[in-house]
Length: 235
Image (cartoon, rainbow, N blue to C red; front, side):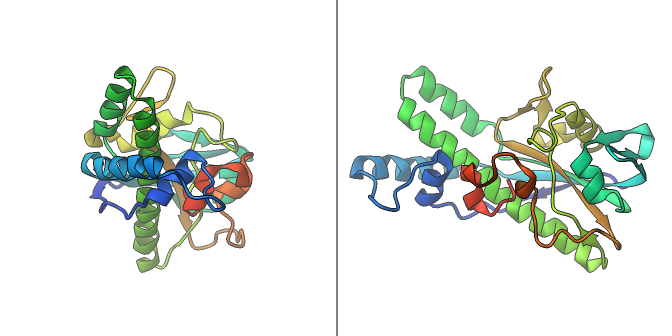
């Protein structure tokens, strides 16, 4: 089994419009007020100085597959009907986890304690935009790595989404990645900290099912209601 690799991800290009989308705001018919626009411009500049995207990833062999689970190396397994359906014929899984660090969380907490709720809300949206766009870059890099080895990949899937509700499977992800080295940890209730973090898996192989361009968002109960859909469906 390969050792986890660490990649620093370049700061993605995030716009004020991305912040509005992350908030679920719709300004396509009427532009935001100048005061609102200026607040978000300041927030974006502040967030860009706080965010440090970094990821860790690792390849893990699949030893067997059932209707609702994948059996992995070292006696580990992952559960989930969609995971087994999508990656059941894969040769291995790529586990990856990413965070933008805790500096943004700390600043947001400061704003909340200071009663600056608008600043905290906008900063939270900026964090969402940065982690989603950073994850898109990360997935592209992983897919490129696999293409060079003449391997196919599935779309990424992650515990905690509506199609994969078992947060306990995050313990398996953390077992293989040991992402404490990039500042990630799990709480007692299996929530990732810092908050703006993701953990997902992708199937890798030469004979994978064809899902005709679908992503994990197509199997999510939120479907097009999710504001993250605007970022390219790799949340």
